[in-house]
Image 1 (cartoon, each protein chain N blue to C red):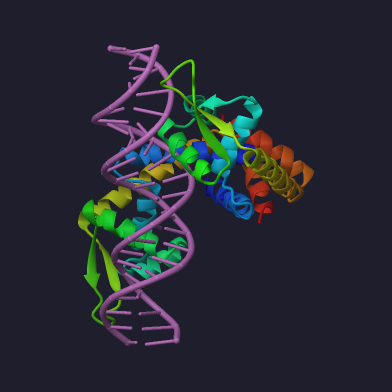
Image 2 (image 1 turned 180 degrees about the horizontal axis):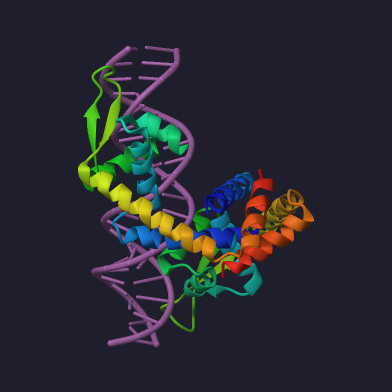
Length: 129
Length: 129
DNA sequence: GAAGATTGACATCTCAATCTTC
DNA sequence: GAAGATTGAGATGTCAATCTTC
């Protein structure tokens, strides 16, 4: 149990460190990536449900992404209760660089495991539901 | 990589959920456990180095543990710059219950893995340094 | 009344700046 | 000046309460 928690934390530190150099965090990148995947402006509620987190969290993340100039808020014409988040050109580009960086880190991660350990790890983690 | 992060987060949720019912968190329990292990009042700096975290974090944790009545701050007679944290009787008892709960969760965790997966998991996680 | 978003308050963590004491 | 602790600010999360719109 402890091995698992320690390994995950050190992995997260590596990820946050790499993304930090791009002016991103995993939380911010996740928002941007869900938006790129959707390929259309999402409401904040839709983003929250895709991130499996709470609405107020998304409100704050979008606040910061907007300050960063990566995202813009737009009123939804069809439902005046809703706000849609729109990627700026810089937001698209930053997401791309973040995703590239993430897959680089993922590659390093897998390289640090022997092939056998890799399959054993996946199998074991899946047993944990 | 993602399997590892997801598994660790869901494990943490289970731990925090169990400890939450005792009025504890993993962060608070870790402080209490380091204090029990030391078996003497530690300075906040000593606690920080044992938790491998930053001093200001410990200051805030001790603030909350003190509000909870689990810990008391005492002046260090030999060095007036230092503050030592002292467990209250309730703090000792709460730590015991938290540690018991944690080992119960750990037991469940290991039960949910086959013996082979368990050794494979440990081996794989150790390969990650 | 319910749904979407925000706000305020709190927990956890970090860093930088500050204050006291060595 | 350096070491111990605190404070202030910011990031990431949660929850409860509120406001607007449906």
